[in-house]
Image 1: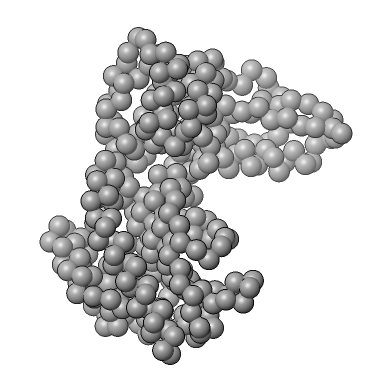
Image 2: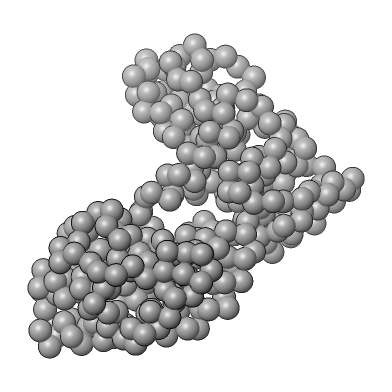
Length: 331
């Protein structure tokens, strides 16, 4: 069977382990000790460009071949880290050191990034060798102009900020905690007796004069604190029928459809926060009320914020879900 094999350096986009390692290092470490391997040359390619190559490959003659692909520029790992920090608005300092063995670097990656030791070892070992496009085959076969490193990084971050794929994963109706890239995601579920359409009419009453189902004064206090530190605070009023783009206290409506309401935080935070309410029916004919909270920290301040306030956040969202489920069942 004819096979086309694409060979690429680092892929800039969510899910690419080298990119996730770079992201985790930059997000978590204000000062980085950089070994020799971060100065090796590579030619990273944007995930969206890789997708274009894969789609266009369907138009080629069915002949087996190997095609090297890459972005529009050759950089170094340390350039990639610097670019990521610039795009995210983070100040990071790199201290070059002459000798750190690949084995030690692999253990270090395991401690501060999502990479398993074996994956970290592969990242380090591949970084030691120059990884750039040596053939012009791709440019001859495809009319594709790949993005540069900065544009690819901006696109990767922008795609994540405006996509809610981490909320839309189909799975079992059960609670879970996960980390998607640098984003912390928590899902809580409750079984309810009312059908989704009826239940969502009650669940979507959150905010405004209706309150937040449990201890609404805590949300008022949070809005007051936000106003004190220069944020928008709690804005008064809400429309009866929410629409995308409208404000709701210190949240903004990102989407409301299919018995689902997704809000993004407008308050001053060391990161980005999303709150999602979803009511649906499972294949086994159960009705589920689901809350998802996601926080994408920005730098160390974001991580400190998340872990310091986590016990209170967990309590508030759990109680709010319980009270919401109770009111739905009461009808």
